[in-house]
Length: 312
Length: 322
Image: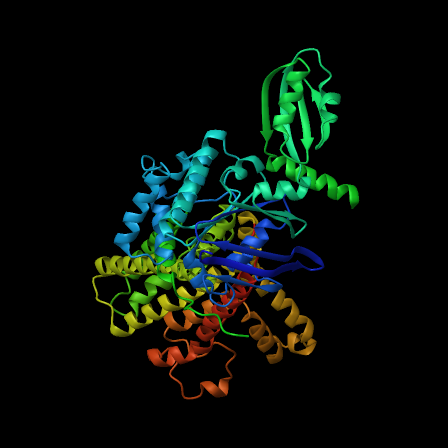
């Protein structure tokens, strides 16, 4: 197992009688991207602030690279880069001056800081607007500048709170690309978001937050198996006069078959693609398409919470 | 509980330099400086035209530059007593809340610094800005006086002038911490500015009136004394003075009076018996004047520290989350 960058155990935060976070356990290794997902108010940001030592946890222990954020916050903050939710900059300074100020606060030596700033700005594609005032920078550019700040610091752990919120598809794609670059550098990334499909694309593991607790944690296929109970999903496009749903439902291993808009959706206990194809052809239908569908995070999420609300 | 590790002053220099640069370059500062400069020049100019006639006879002609007033214009120190708090509040009222409103706070606090460095850096940068402005003004007044009066200031005048500068700086510092405290407590910059200005008006304009009423109520004037043409009772005078010294503007006024009018012997009531054998109107040495205002000056410094401590505690307990 690779080096553990972050570990939190039994993390809780109470605001009066209300638990914003209760009993959260997290572990993150070098070069790993963990996505924290959940609706607004599920405790993601509070968890992040506790990890950074910006809020004191009511109970639980945190270890960031061997340091406790409460007792040694400076050591922790030196190792962690943070991109807050809707990050702000000083409008009276240029992009480069903003980063220079952060570099001075971070205590980086001058030459190293200048080189780091230029490299980071280039990496996020802001080198051309670096010396323009902040007022001319768009929301997407500000978000990228925030990421440049994390890059410049050269951290072990990058904590990104809703990095893609409010960005257009191209901008968020670029941002996620830079985040993949962080992973390639060996930086551990903790990403929080409520935009599920975008997060799915970059995360190694995801942790689903709900009412201050992590209700599900693992890789996306892993979660799918747990939520859907080991179900395989296939889709077929057929042409021909056949009653596909009842035809497939009769096959062994198939749980359920439904048709909608000419596409047949089959839920099965195992990989039954060969049987499906054979049955379709034997019934005289033309098989145009047969695919195995990976359930999306979105589907997992919805299915899980529907189940929850049903029982709760 | 274990102590937190690392120095609270890490990053202090960076904050100080940035805030100082922001202050000196800001349009707010520009307006305030010109305001002080123009009113100052007006006051000093009239003073000089009056003083030219007494240059030879007055041993403290340079100090008169600061204190001389001719209707309708106020004296230079009256202008400063009015504008220094205004300038200090202008520098501090959005120190902390602007960081939240610009959403830079969490980004800055995620850097390896303590909040101590941020607050102290902002306070000292504001104080340094005030000091720069005051020293500039002071030098201008003295230079203006040198050219027009044609006599060099004596050593006593220079030391009294510098003493005045230090007291004015701490007076400004007190209002700066009040403004910073407001900026910690109120998330809206406008609310913070209004509360700070309200407190200043309370201390400067309303407090003396309140004190007078209170003293009158507690020690009602004796009808017999009044009929005989006597003033208020000693108890009333003392109570009124003690209460009025709660206001920093009283402390400042008294300090300035003793520093710039060397003949001032006491700041409270004096009995005839205490004046026996004294040479009326003779100036006190600088050291004695300093002794006279020591409690006032200490009060101003202590007030600055106490208000700063309150701001510090409030800021430390604040949630970073906007």
